[in-house]
Length: 326
Image (tube, rainbow, N blue to C red; front, side):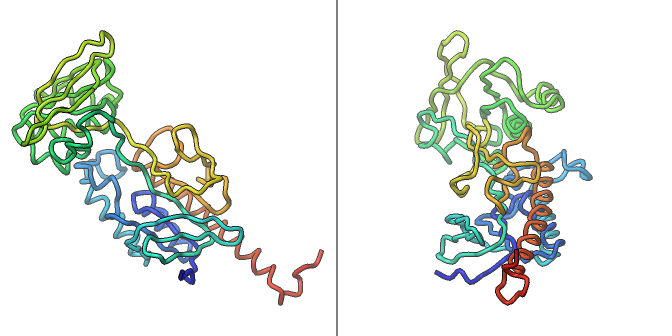
């Protein structure tokens, strides 16, 4: 296996956190490579509009991603399109194994792998994915123009996507397990003022029905009375949160009960030289600006770690007369 490629820093994941880390790492003169198997930008690419990125009152998600990518590349950041198979911590160096068989060796690693859409786990969800079941309104909303759709969830993402779908669909029914939303006040006001959006409170989806043409209805259960009901719909969009993509987190790194990595204020993990940022890290809120902030913090911390590490290794060289002296 070829592990001859030595870097100061390997960044795994090209979302806002990873790209920001790349910017700061290059500014710190670290030899850095960012590995991303999909399109740089991550989940931001799936957002129709971003309205809480400082300096831009409203910007398309894909446009914001391209700006971040262009900024990072302007510093000469190497971006490798590949899948990471494993991260192997070491006492001297860390090794990042790529799916194709190659590997990268580095002083420090930043994990920015984010999360994946959480599933309902009900009958029909897996079977009818792509046939009416979706986790991305921007990707699939076009196919439901002038049709009736349902959205599961009550947080910011669910309401943002509901508002987007209301531009296309004839009707949007928001299904929420509680009697009030968790989304921000401004989003709630917009959703409740939108005539195409309705709400089905205190309800959960128990099954998804479909025919040869796709989804036809969802079975519901009232969370208080337990009574079943059925809602006719042409599509179901699910936005109930994300699960951390923690497959690459090495053993020995502390995680909380939900699988998010526990770090300190520098985004450092319990293994020296390995940092975790963005939606993979345990934190109070999950926003683009916070992922970018994590990227900055981790890159600066990694730069200090690499500098210290290199100095220590140089002092330990046998030809150094000071080596071995008490």
